[in-house]
Image (cartoon, rainbow, N blue to C red; front, side):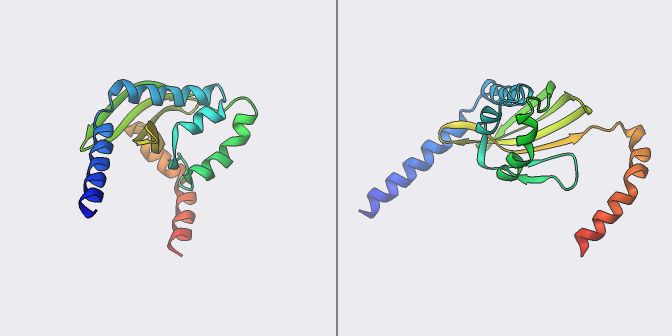
Length: 163
């Protein structure tokens, strides 16, 4: 009996790993493009169906580290208005190593050029976004003025986090 359970578990692990290792760049591009397009169309159901159940979305604001549930609640009013956000990929790099698929992308957005990066997992035999980080790309020559602009806010938030 123990051998049967061991073979079953081993087979399950090997099948899961094989599924993850066989993720193609075409599949990754399709998921990410569909996800961005769903936001542009304000298609709430499709947008969140492309994220894992325990997905994390990290936004451009230091306070934006959301679970999927929290991000759904934050996003719902935007989708309900019929206009969420529109991110158009300009460049994307996809990496798969040791069964893990991750990516980074430059995006054209209402905030100018942003960078997105994340990790995808297979959940219920579907490739989905498990972790996404959005950041505003700041040219190096503008960092000093941007740092000065946000200095007071940063100091207040740093104090809050340390207490």
